[in-house]
Length: 272
Image 1 (cartoon, rainbow, N blue to C red):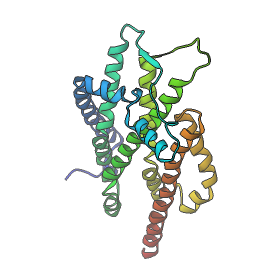
Image 2 (image 1 turned 45 degrees about the vertical axis):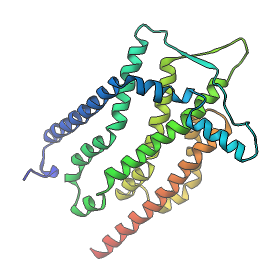
Image 3 (image 1 turned 135 degrees about the vertical axis):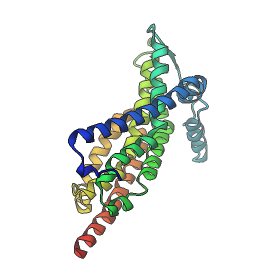
């Protein structure tokens, strides 16, 4: 049987952490290689999907507009901008970094698994048992956030910024790197924001927050949520509302999870 983490020296901890990071990086590289090969699907279907007027989100808002009796007011017939690459290595660099991003996103459950393998030996048996579904739940929340960022945040941002002009004399020619950076930021930030319940679970476990603390500071949380929404979405009210609602919902879920964890901790302390 291997020694527990609390019996290991600092250098042994670093050595073990290094191997967890190596295996995680290797997983990202393997998946990124597959994404690099699948260039046509990654770019033509996924990356450039939100710039097409028949994208799922645009059609959904168009159908919603008709259902609400607003005619075609929310329908999008075209996105008046072009994407260009002005750097010599621009397209290759975009291809490479997009593949790495895809590798990270798809490898996220395995990265969590390696993280769990590193910290779990330092936990008590009941703590490991209570956190048994950590990898599954955290992965599901991350992928839901990624999908929300791709199907909601990204199209809203592209539609707003692609149609925004200061003068009819200026035509929008977006650089390839700028376009992909917007999509990447929207997807990854949404994915990590949706990890809020998991974060609050661990913060409650280690005593950094309590359910009462989260409730008392709900108004400050709303301000923070609105600030985050303003950062990851264009500055129009409908887009910010669409992003704010699920984040507030996640905050309420976090309070509920924190309450369960806190009650369980109080019960365990009373039984000691």
